[in-house]
Image: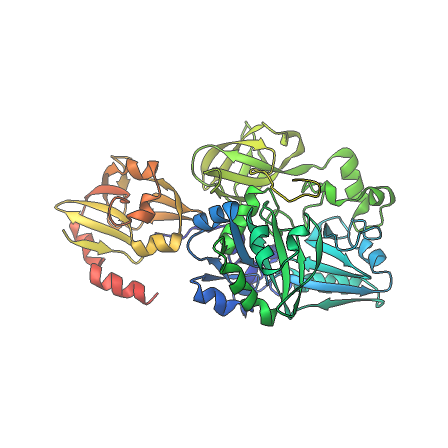
Amino acid sequence: MSREVHNGPTDDTQARGTAFSGDPEGGEGTGTPQLDRLPLDAWHRARGGRMVPFAGYEMPVQYEGIMAEHLWTRENAGLFDVSHMGQLLVHGSDVAGALETLMPGDFRAAADMKPKYSLLLEEDGGIVDDLMATRRGDQFYVVVNGATKHGDIAYMENRLSGAVAIDYMKEQALLALQGPKAAEVLETIVPGVSALTFMQGGPFQWQGQNLWISRSGYTGEDGFEISVPATAAAGLADAIVAHELAKPIGLGARDSLRLEAGLPLYGHDLDTRTTPVMADLNFAINKRRRAEGGFPGAMRILAELQNGPIEKRVGFEVDGRQPVREGALVLDGEGNQVGKITSGGFSPSLQRPIAMGYVATHLAEAGTALKLEQRGKLFDARVVPMPFVPHRYHRKGAA
Amino acid sequence: MPVYFTKEHEWIRVEGDTATVGISSHAQEQLGDVVFAEVPEAGRKVTKGQEAAVVESVKAASDVYAPVSGEVVEGNQALADDPSLVNSDPEGQGWFFKIKLDNPGELDGLMEEGAYRDWVQTL
């Protein structure tokens, strides 16, 4: 038996630092990567986590199995260790104005303690990384992807004046508790968190430790992301999984959950060759910023907003049972290549293959029938709206 | 009925001049939840070391190689219909195909069961 294809974020392309990953530390591609250990490394191993290289760390891809962990998170509460992600504190003179020179969001009017999704951009509008930025008083707390964090810091420091400083909070771990029972579970440990609504954060305390918790995540479910001092992370993780509705969940299920939720993964669905408009992330381009411009790549991005991009990120429903994965080609009825699959796999919730990719804009409409080609085999597929599985966020004003 | 294993984690159970082929318990553990299996049709000629079937889990796609050369006499339709048999019974109901051996001498290079089980412990 061969292991032909690895898929999704648990492959080691990101950890190896190939050019594709956007990992600024890499480039050699062939050498043995120097892998770091997460603060919860021993905790994962003690719980049977199977550790794989990812984003420069050894990380748990699964504990009992991806399918079971995925379905558990959709029904209960799953605890994810996402401490590989970069937690940054950006502060200094006119920090909001400074961030607006890098990203298309409205940071000047950003409300306190409300995380905003945004994108670091190249001068040509290509995406350097996607991130969450939250105003905390006169600072911004920014969470970036693990594989790209060092490059992001260098990118920001190169472009920002000395009046703005970036602190890499490497003493902080980051946990995510996701699923319809996440609020019920976390409320027993950190009273008051269930008062947060989707995309709202705040400071909390647990056993004398300062936590920063936001109601957000990467699964499409209700849930929380918890920044905790690394020294207290194992204790907090223990307290969470002591609840009968919470279990540790690995990276494998994190990938299948986010794919069902239609959420792009940097280094796969987003990179420096894609713009926010191509990636169908127009919501991240603020109205005032559309009028004023002033962010990297504004000329191209505003033109794409007006005229449409040449290609667009869409979802695909694939006939049959065989997963169609990253790298498969998208073909039109005449066999011409019209796009590429950037993420794909078997959906545990829908029990069928689903995929995400880019296709020429005139073929991007929902319902368009296309062919996918993988290892010489053709698959029937249709463009479908995303998410594949409806989001169930705890929005303000909802019951 | 002797069972042999390959270093690529296929097993082959020999009964006279035919044999049943599947992937080992160790292999299915490594793959995780299997969601797709493609088995060869009867009549197809397979060559030792060449791909004969496909198995895919949530995370990975793999080829299953023919441990020996021969002609497929049956693909396991039950497996194609329910790929999770690879996980629940990899060395039993989760078999992939049966073949008529071209050359039983090809079995000589394969691992005996005890040697295989010892070897996977070291992986």
